[in-house]
Length: 251
Length: 360
Image 1: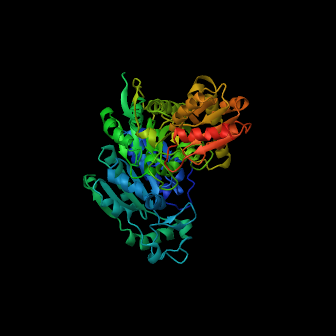
Image 2 (image 1 turned 135 degrees about the vertical axis):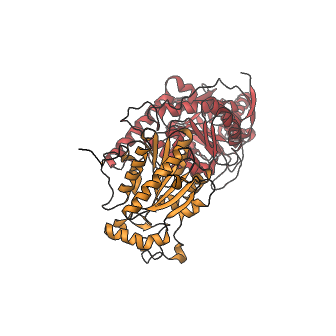
Image 3 (image 1 turned 90 degrees about the vertical axis):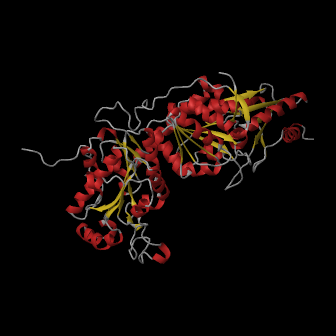
């Protein structure tokens, strides 16, 4: 019998520690599939963040660095400069990338480091128990915004893809989600595009995946995806903000 | 090779290249700016990477990345910038990644000033960042030693898989002296089997650089492993071939008062010792060249023969407690220092010696 579905070679057999219904496992798988399809597993180096995906290094079958909170793009810079033929990516959440690591992501992007950034935006700090993130929606109730995020005191949700796209160096900036199968396939394509560009030494690519946090949102996984569709996507519209080499058209 | 006249900061840069370092990540700050400026010009000539980072924090994390990928890599800064790097240094120590960090000390705390100081001794020798860890701390006192200790620093870092801190100051960084540079050393970025991207692993092997051990038993095991390593480092500098590297003694055998100082201070103290001898005062000098691990044995021995110690520093007296611990307080340990960016004169120090040996 022909095997039509199996674990990607780049994904390790370690069981995910993520909460039931979490998007991280699926996004990890999409990254592993892209690495497999490009046949670069033997020269890929990942950089894990601080946050829910802090243990990402356990889930992939290639070399990994575990970085300090927000510093993954700086660590990735050091790795890529040392081993320019490696495929280097960071995998970061919204607290890591859009709060404490804002300087590192902006400047790695602005230097046009030939790396790929997978940015998982679920509008909340997951690992520490559900605190307000820079991407939390106005009115969103979290552990540290118990009355709802108030724009007057906490500002507005920060739009990282739009910010990154204003820079000249990045070659591919796109926002995707995995709330349904069609979007999941688009996400897979985007991740593949990003790594393809890196393999061709084209430069910095940034994939924002709008995601859920059923546990800290206090919702069932299906309800969380519904909430994402109805509430997050209007604030974080899907789409490609930059595609210098037209990778989406040529793909 | 003939001697060349160089600034201390530049000598570090050239020595790093000779040691096979091809990666520098840093951020501008006085009084160390000649070093990045030198490497910005020199590294491209040897196919190396010079990168001016967006911050000290980013720079040390780039060092963490490059070091974890097998590079001989360095960063440099001055006191306030070194404070910012402590987060990264803690991660680097935890993940056991070799690298060289240069601190050309200036006056603090806070923004302080840009004049030479030695007030980062505690930060350097006690760890600086969070957690149970140590950095090897080297203290040069000449432009020649800035070069020699840079090269030795990379060797120690690789040997022990540990960050090495070169603790210098604004005087040493800025002054010019003739220096003998050794022959270049070839370094292969693919020589470390544990490094990320190491070519030569079996298909099923992979390398991870990490400082997280979420299981408390595993972290305890890791911390004791680090502790054991630090014991090995301590023995390495206390015994064997590096014994003389770690400490310099001058006229100590019959000395009644031992002057103690490191870095630029030790050169002033040498003059003071000579002036004392001319005046019939039996003075000697101990200069720790490695500040961690501290050369305890010398003080233990001299506490038996000398009558007193005088520690001289460009701080409010941070090394004093190490001298007291090493000599087990068997003889009185006095202190004289200038802080805030002033270098004490030999005259001032001589006055202090006079007060101690001729109290009336």
